[in-house]
Every structure is written in C-alpha cells, then in structure tokens.
Length: 153
Image 1 (cartoon, rainbow, N blue to C red):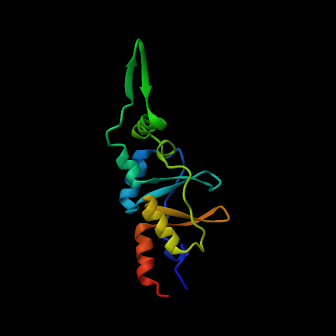
Image 2 (cartoon, rainbow, N blue to C red):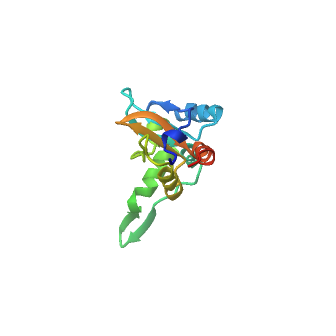
Image 3 (cartoon, one colour):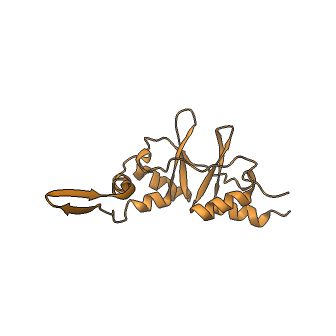
C-alpha cells in the first residue's frame, strides 16, 4: 500500500490566528524549527499559510511599478498589481497581510506521491491535511521525505 498524506503528517502542527503579529510568528517558527504555520479563524477554518519564505520576502527589494510619461500624462504600469502585492507583504504587521490564501490542501488519503508533486511543482514547503474541512495535520517537506524513505510498499 502506498503512503498517504496522513502517513507523512508532521506532529508539530503550528496554527496561528490572522491577527497574530509577524514578528511573534518569526520567533515562534525559529524556536519550533517549523517551515511555517497554518492561519486559522476562531472556528478552525483554514484561511491561509505563512511560511519562512514569506518572512524572508519581507526583506527583499520591492519591484516598483514602471512609470511612463506620454505627452502630459503619467501612466503607471504594474502588471497584475505586483508592486502593490509586494509592498503589502513587505510592510505586513499581521499574518493576515502576509499569508498565502487559496491554500493547496490534501485529504488524509491523498497519496503522498501527489503531495510530493505539488510541493515540487508549486514550490510548496507545507500542505495542510483537511478531513471534511477540518484541519487534522500538515505535511512538510521534511515529514514527506521521512515518510517516503521509511514507507515500504
């Protein structure tokens, strides 16, 4: 039998509310040695994910929009709102401003091979495991690696 997302669950699930301070999250992730946290509301609904990379992103150079002068008009060119999104992340004070929404999630029975595909193809460091909408765990890159190499078919 092939390994599943539940087989690769990391037992150190870290959840935070959307109003949690970014600085506090950075300290908590560092202390826990976790790649990120799942952002949940009071009912336990998954709202997003904040990863170490999101925290690193805050220190990168923001791409400013291109400004083009045409006759007497000044036109700002910001395809897809990239500069606005980067500025929002760079100045985030709460995880709600920093988190990635539209989270890719697995069910407990999702094959680990599918989770691994998502992680590699989409650059994900963690995938929440949801059972009928309820958060039951998370697969991290490290936990996926451990499960893949300890599981035998």
